Amino acid sequence: MADKAYLCTPKKTVKLQVFSEISALRSFLAPLRSPSRPIGLVPTMGALHAGHLALIAQSKQHNPLTVASIFVNPTQFNNAADLEKYPRMPEADTAMLQAAGCDVLFCPSVAEMYPVPSALTMDFGNLNRILEGEFRPGHFSGVGLVVAKLFNIVQPARAYFGQKDFQQLMVIRQLVSELCIPVEVMAVPTLREPDGLAMSSRNLRLTPAERAKAPVFYETLQYAQAAIKTKKPWSEIRQEAAMKVAATGFRLEYLALATQPNFQLTENVTDSQPKVLLIAGYAGNVRLIDNLIIE
Ligand code: PAF
Image 1 (cartoon, rainbow, N blue to C red):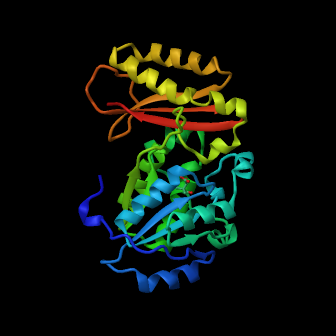
Image 2 (image 1 turned 60 degrees about the horizontal axis):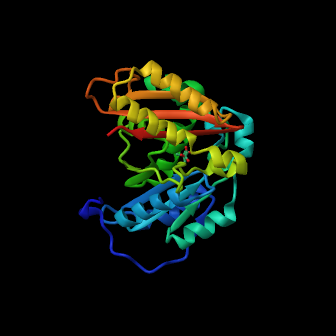
């Protein structure tokens, strides 16, 4: 539920302003930004879907001006083929943002964002070493770098991220907290397809046969949640989950349980500490992730 203090009065749809240069975007935003006219930022890598539109909708509710960015950030890809195959559909994305009433689109080139190869790396400690941090070395360093750049370029009051990338959200919260960046990080719940598959730009890369079986990751999370409630040992839950995923021909990379809010891996299914279940795996060549906050 949105905080009433944030709510903005709806305004007429205006034409989406598109910028690819940092200096032009900065000049445009400078006179529009003030404490009473905060900017909301929705950072994306494009191939937009309803999940992204939910981020835009939230930002529009809270802020009089919403900026979306589309940038397939090379420094966060640890796999060259994944970067190359990442879906890119600028025309469709622009039309979606215009229809959603987004005010500004920032879609820089790689040369604009990285005029020289970046020498800076970021280490988020525990978050860098477990789960996504472990399986995608360098990924969070690249995410931290590009999000810090976007925050400095746009200077939003609030920035909106999907809860589907749960660990990324924690990385961004750590970035903002440790660097004292004056941005409020807003988490938006995951949107799902009718069969439960978490919405993701990567879903576009699934073949029809893979897409039909892809809900197995969410089903496995639901199975694990139910099993935790019966206090089944974690090792058994983990093994049964792996079998469930393997039965589809997909590969489970991890199913993990982490405490909230400090994000420590745990196998304890009996204590009452709040937790989140996280899953990652491959549907063919496409890597999918999902999570479920245990209620
Ligand atoms: O979640 C994403 O799409 C990306 O990781 C982000 C936050 C836009 C940074 O490139």
